[in-house]
Length: 341
Image (cartoon, rainbow, N blue to C red; front, side, top):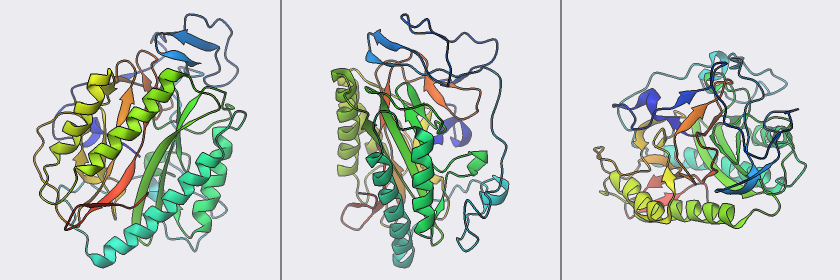
C-alpha cells in the first residue's frame, strides 16, 4: 500500500493532488452518455489512451468511511492486531530507519509470505463478471486463515482488507460491487500483519483481453520494478531506485506518480525510508537489514491524481490508465532479497 507523499515527506511534492467536490467538474469520456448505476459504470472510452472504461465517482458528496474496529466475526480474537486496528490511528511517524536483526527478518518473511499468497489468490479470481468486493472477501478470509491480520483494514479508517484500483484509478480504490469487464486492468494491493510485522505487495492483472496500449503499460511497469530491484544492495544510494525507474519509463512516454511513494516496512505498516520512484536528491543509502517496498506507478498521461469524495480513491486527472507492481525486500550483505516473490 502506497504512502501519500504529502502526508509525511520532508518537503512539498512537485505535483498537487486535487480533491473532487460538489463544485468540481468531472471530465466525462467523449462517447459516454448513459448515466451510472454503480460507481464507475460507463461506456468504454475510445481515446488516445486506448479502449477501456474510465471510472468516475458515483457521487461528489463527501463519503469517507469512519474508523471502525473490525468485529470478532471479521477478524477472530486469537489473531494479533496492529495497534491501529481499534482506533484507526497509526503510530507517530519515526524518523529513524529500523535495521532488522535475523529474528526480525524471519518474522517479516512470514508476513510477506502471507501477503504473497493472498495476492496470488486475488489474482486467480480476476475475470469478467467478478466484483472487487468478492475478491476482497476471499482474500480477507485467506489472510485470517493464516493467522494474520489484513493490514489495510481500518488503517486510517480504510474499510476493506485490500485495495483494488482499476483502469484510471491510480491507487487506494475501495472494493465495491462493480463487475470487472473485459479489457479492464486491475491492481490488487495486499498487506498482511503477522508475528508483529507487515508484508506488502501488489500486482496489476489483465481482465480478459486488454488492448495493446494497456498491455504495454503493464509490461513496462513490471520491468521498471524489476530493474529497480536489481540495483539495490548495501551502500547503494536510495536515489538509485528513482533514477533507474525514470531512466527506463520516461523515454517510453510514461509519467511517474510523485504523490505516492514506496516506504519502509516492518513493525510499522509505513515508516522511513520513503522510496521515491522518480529522479530525486533525497539523502541516504541502503544498509543490510533495511526493509522497504518498491512500488512504481506508471501512467499513460499525466500522473497528477484526483482524490475522490470517498477520501481514498485516487484517479488520474486526464483519465489515462495507470498500473503498479510492488514487492517488499530486505537489503542483505551482498544485495537484496525479495520477500514477496
